[in-house]
Length: 170
Image 1 (cartoon, rainbow, N blue to C red):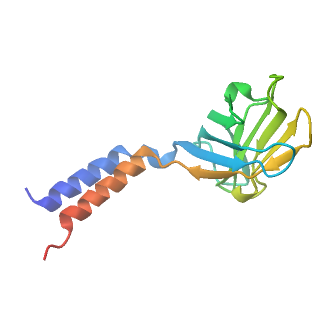
Image 2 (image 1 turned 90 degrees about the vertical axis):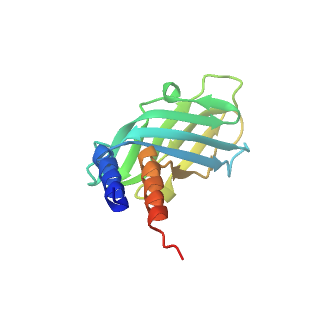
Image 3 (image 1 turned 60 degrees about the vertical axis):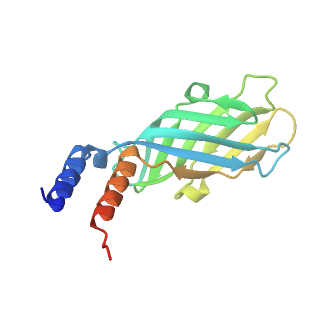
């Protein structure tokens, strides 16, 4: 059988199976930051997931988070820790961050409450703020990085394989 026919058939089969992934997907972002002001020092990190199927790409939109894992000063927080239902925010179809706030009931945790807030119009405006039990309130940096979807990774591997098959040989 012709190599071109085999490769074309495999590529068409792959993309036919993955058409639904083009419509909407469970999106995951990793995030991290450093406390930059106030009376506390430290870093924080985590990940957040949500389904973006309802995003229309028009104006400001919010969708509920399906998962959040947040590590701050050696303590872990999740969806159940939130004061209000946490959301992912979009502006004109562009991810601008999340809204997630927690009031700690742990008297030994140095932070009384904290929040991750989205930007007004873009992701670079997203922020972390906190109020300690004792001391001065502060804030920190917040950066997000999108986790590639598994189907995208498989697609890239497939395209790489096609490239290897068709590479020119001296």
